Image 1 (tube, rainbow, N blue to C red):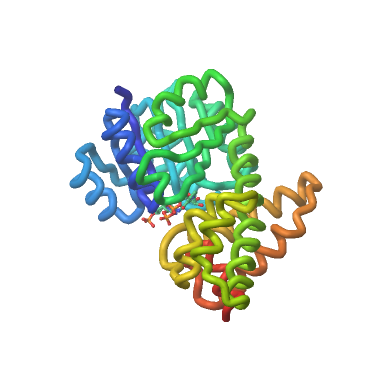
Image 2 (tube, rainbow, N blue to C red):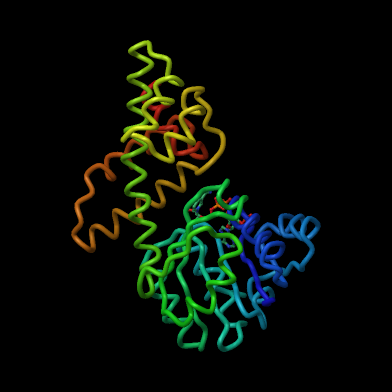
Length: 289
Ligand SMILES: NC(=O)c1ccc[n+]([C@@H]2O[C@H](COP(=O)([O-])OP(=O)(O)OC[C@H]3O[C@@H](n4cnc5c(N)ncnc54)[C@H](OP(=O)(O)O)[C@@H]3O)[C@@H](O)[C@H]2O)c1
């Protein structure tokens, strides 16, 4: 059993922290900016809540975070009352936020100066993956730190991979999002076309999902797309944040991402339709408007 702090109890962090406590059997202290969520978590799972990231992180073996973007991450680590200044030497910070590779490298260096280990460890698998403790975790960092943290990460994961040095976890997550962007647009166009052609979408998907067109998005999203339901899942605002990170990185490394750039603009249209918090499968709503 380890002493663990978890910073950020959102859609993802709340259940992930729960698995660290219940499945991992760790002693968990939680911090959330809106304190009521931390109190709710403690009422549900036990453990302790803290009022600042520093208070939560003090003397812990492992400190996890799952917040919004680069700036949020800087706030909870190196900002005022941030975790880093309070962490003991030899402790490990594991960041599950989807953020840039740049901030991962910056924080890995800041952590090393203080004798703390740092892993960028973004996740894939969505809300259901977090709730069921079966996330895919893409990790950047050094091997010794990874080997020490891995048994703890396992509490909320089905697949954990060390992808390379600091930032490599975030770069892998970028590839994940690049692959999803074009795929969801293709799925939206397929369903849109099927409706126009007067076919039974359920029947179409039942058949083609077993062939070469099958995908996680097809299996898990076709029903709600067909019903025009988008008030759940992975928010369009978050996807635009992620695609922005991919496009910035592509500017630096020279990769060409024409479809990713186009789909990012399609998501801008969805935001304008009022879909900022809609699931990413709402690309279909844009075609049907
Ligand atoms: N949802 C998904 O399906 C999914 C899947 C994979 C990856 N992700 C990534 O995981 C991260 C979290 O996503 P989520 O869906 O859990 O988001 P969310 O529900 O909006 O939760 C965000 C959490 O971060 C906290 N936070 C934000 N800014 C903060 C700051 N400046 N200081 C302290 N706390 C701050 C929020 O606190 P408050 O409660 O006070 O707002 C909240 O606890 C994002 O990077 C997202 O891209 C999400």
